[in-house]
Image 1 (cartoon, helix red, strand yellow):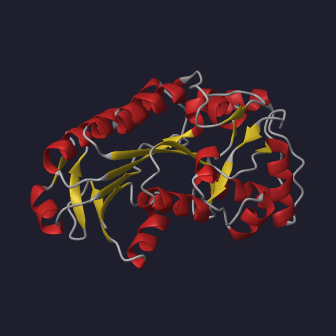
Image 2 (cartoon, rainbow, N blue to C red):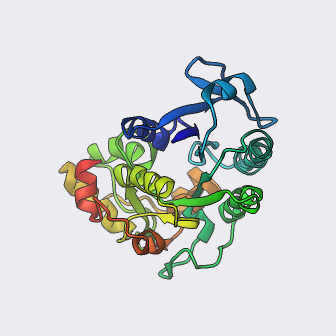
Length: 296
């Protein structure tokens, strides 16, 4: 297939692009900068470089992973505006451009997040669960809704709701490793909140599966089948690194240091399972957290 991919320099994009190329696909990144090996994307207007697009040919798929990093810094009003604009408004404009200029498109895979479900305690959450409350739930709903015009036009649209991606190259795990290696890690808050995780290898395979499996459309949770409590995640990571993991990060400290972002990303509880992926026949390489931590 001829595939366009935004967010190609992000955690998933960097792992995904070489896999797609190795699989025989022709891939071009959408880039804010003008580069020989990519197609320039003017995020503010949604416009794609028409000359480069024409030279590439007729793209059949768009994998849309771009967006402001939600875990970088406190959520000031300005930060929240950038998060919302980089996901909702940018996707709306990109979709409008695609509808006008890429009639060959057959499938759109958009990144979303399990933040869609909000904080739900011990409730088991599947793709049929209603949206939750809070800023992230609002953003995810708007983010997914921005691609609706493509579905109306007959494009197969897949919303991939990512959980915590385990990779030593970036994301939450990469930030935890230095702390845990010093023996300073431990549970966050009560430690009873659920963590829904997925290995980077399986996350990439789930994108590939959605790309080529034509029965896949709508929302799909990109998480492993066995979410764990935060205290158990901390204990398993400590064991993997052969370091104690007994120093808790109190809830009050999370709120003081990280504010609303800490509440949403560190203290919230989302027990999410990949029901639709499993029903579609996807098989996980790393369904066990201990094994995933070894290989991540």
